[in-house]
Length: 503
Image (cartoon, rainbow, N blue to C red):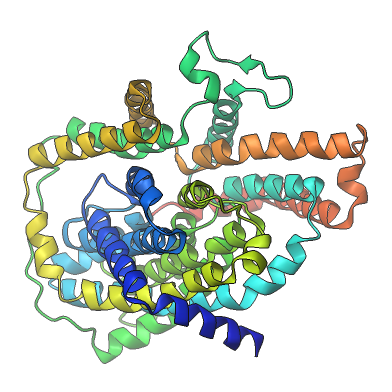
C-alpha cells in the first residue's frame, strides 16, 4: 500500500501543467539530440545546466531526465535509417537495424525499437519505484567504508562489462582516476598536478572531458573519413508495424533486454551503454530458430533486445543516484550537479525530506515514456529530413553548441581549450579502439573513492581492517575480488572476447 500511496503522491505532483510542459520539452529535446549525430544527453544536459537555475527543482529534474531517456529513443532512428548512431547506446542497434532498412524493413525496425523502448521504460520505472524504499533503508547502513567498497566494485564491474580488450578498459579507468586527481587536495589545500596553471586548481572539468571525448572526438573522426562514407543513406519507410512473426521473435528479446538493462542500470558503470552491448551479446548466444535471419544481416531481435536494454538501464540508473547519492554514469553525475544547484543533497534523505520531488520525478518517467512513443512514430519523416542537412553545416553547429555549453558552465575560455585537447584525445582513443566510458567512470568515481577512503581511515584512526570487519564492506570487496578472479581466468576471458566480436 505504501508504494501505491507514494505513486499517487508522485502522479498528483507530476500531473500539473508546468511539469507536463517540462516533461514534453525534455522528451522532445532528448529525441532531437538522439537523432542528431555528434550530440548526446551528456553534452546537452551540460549545456542546459545553467538554464535550470531559474526553474523550480522538480521541473528542472523532470526536463533533464526526459532528455536522458528521450535520447535513447531518438538514437535508434538514425542508427536504423542511416547507420549513424545518434547516441552511443544505439551503436549495436545499427548492426541489424540498418540492414533491415536496406532490405526495405525500416518500418518494423523502427517500430520494434519504439515498442521495446516503451515496454522497457515502463518496467524500468516500476523497478525504480519498487526498489527505491528498500535501497534507501539499506543506504542508512552505508558508511565511508561501504561506499569505498561499493565504488571499487563498480570500477571492476565496468572493466568486466566493457567491450573489447580488458587491458584497454583497465588503462582507461586508470587514466580517468589520474585525471580526477588534478586539483586542490581536500585535506591539505595543496594544488596537485596543476602544472602552475591557476585554472586547474579546481580540477579538470568533467563536462569538458565528456564533450571533448564524445562530441569533438567523433566529429574529428567523421571528418577524417571520405565524403562518400559520410553520405546519408535515404530509404522510404513503407510498412510501419512488425508482422505477427516479428512480434513472436522480438517480444522474448524485449523481456530479456528489459531484465538485463534493469539489473545493469543499477550498477555503477552500468546504464544504457553497457546494457545495450550486453543484451546484443545475449541475443547472439540464443539458439536461432529455423528461417531466422542471421545477426548482422537484419535480425529483429538485434534491434528489440538492445533498445529495450538501454531504455531499462537509463531508468534504473536513477536508483543509485537518488537513493545512495552515487552517480552510476556520466549523465547521472550531471543530474547530481543539477540537484546541488538547487541545494538538494542526493542520497537517502531525499525521499524523507522531499517526497514530492522524489516520487514526482519517478511518476514523470511514466508520463515521459508515453509522450515518447507518441512523438517518435509519427515524426519519423521529419527526422529523415533533418538528416538531409549537409555534414559541412552540421558539424560546425555541433562544435559551436559544445563550446557555448562548456563556457557557460564556468564562464571560462580555458574550458573551451580543454574540450579541444580532449577532442584530439578522443580521436586517438577511437583509432586505438579504446572505449571512453570507463575513463569517464574513473573520473567521476576517483575523487569520491579518495574522499571515502580517507574518511574511513580517519574514523578508524588509520586501521585498514575497517574495510573487512564491517559486513557490508567486506561482502562488496569479496564480490569484487571474485568477479576479477573469474574474469581473469583464461577460459572466461576468451569467451568474453568472443562475445564482443561480430560474426
